[in-house]
Image (cartoon, rainbow, N blue to C red; front, side):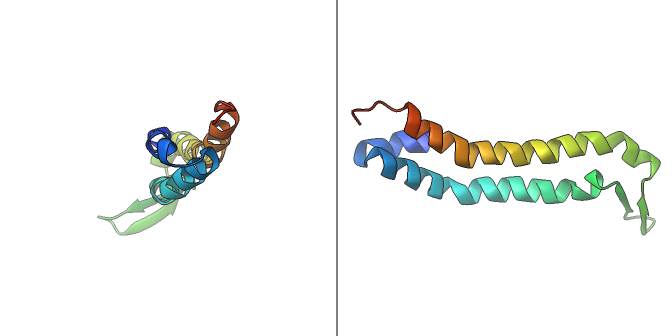
Length: 101
């Protein structure tokens, strides 16, 4: 989506301005999506089990042992991919674009 937004802005702006405007316009949607998912998975990643029916909160329950590694991988993967999307991709767009632009 970021590259598509860049391609739409590129004909009307300079290369640098198109990259900066694209990164600014995509910052909020990317951060909201990643951060809300990471916060939603934090209880699972921290091995906290919340039983809504029994009104019980427990730590390191047997069911959490199954989901601990998966949720940790998703949380750290989302954090890493957010950095790639918001920092590395715009930098690569600037570096790999033709020099005559």
